[in-house]
Image (cartoon, rainbow, N blue to C red; front, side, top):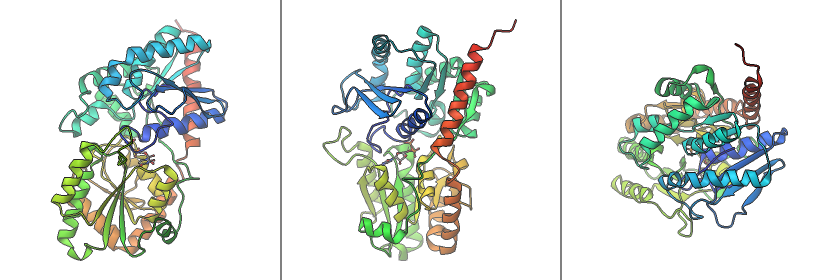
Length: 416
Ligand code: UDP
């Protein structure tokens, strides 16, 4: 498993750590449980981590030193990718281990996959998690300065990988239409949720555990503090909600989970968080919005259960684990009609969907769920039912079956 910039052991919710880290962690563990031996190669980012760490029986994380052991921007990770690749190869030689296939995550890992495939004649499976061309459509600037190189690398990975994994039908068609992927190469495998962690709890208990008032209307946002997550649209929507219904001010509050608030963290309070704080000020929402920083998943589960609505206002989303986790906790979701969110959230059944970037529509949907108790109960029930279908175990079943198909195709005699 190659996951150059997303370590499966990383603290989540900070800079560049989110769904992909969870995906690699959960998939690797599930595969390992079924006897597939997994080594995850990732860039060494946290000093206290050991170079090699167990992820569970049969699964290891191998930290590869390339650049300083701390957060570095993706452009710098890319600049050091040859060093990373070289070290992975030397590690493999030194251990004398041989692999059957390479499963790589995100565009940065695709380059490493190409090198390993060429050297040891290995089949490769690629999952992008987000696509550069899709991101470019919704972002007004190339925030990470990664665009051109990224798209070139993605195109090559689409051409040369043996198989591609898409998290939704929508991502599959983006791969086909924007990148010219051959449809037979693309497998749609939705992501999963851990039902042991994300399960319904009584709202009163969750609120008590968190020390929140029982009578407040609690709106929750969870995610990395990035423009692509659309928090600015949510703040705008909240401003509009209070303009329309001034009576709700003082009753509704928004809790934002994610981002590093701890100055000792390697991702100190970012410019993005500063920008959001000034937006909060602009909309006069200081008394309404709480930025509480990132949380581990068990703690996060209590927040989902305490919330009345979880807002997922992303501008684009390959899947949207946050929506699924909230649903698994029985919390209705108001999400944007983009990417995988459209397949996770069923409109009117497990949540409401609104157009991306539309603060007006978002405000209206939030208002409906907050004010209409029956609708909220109906969506909460639908959300729980829907989430039950998505487990990491079924993700691993599908991925393992894909591995088998790829290996069989490799070993099949060549027909002339
Ligand atoms: N997450 C977390 N703590 C936080 C914020 C986020 O554990 O403070 C996790 C969250 O539970 C989810 C993931 O980060 O599993 C975010 O995944 P999603 O697919 O929603 O977004 P991505 O990060 O992939 O864009």
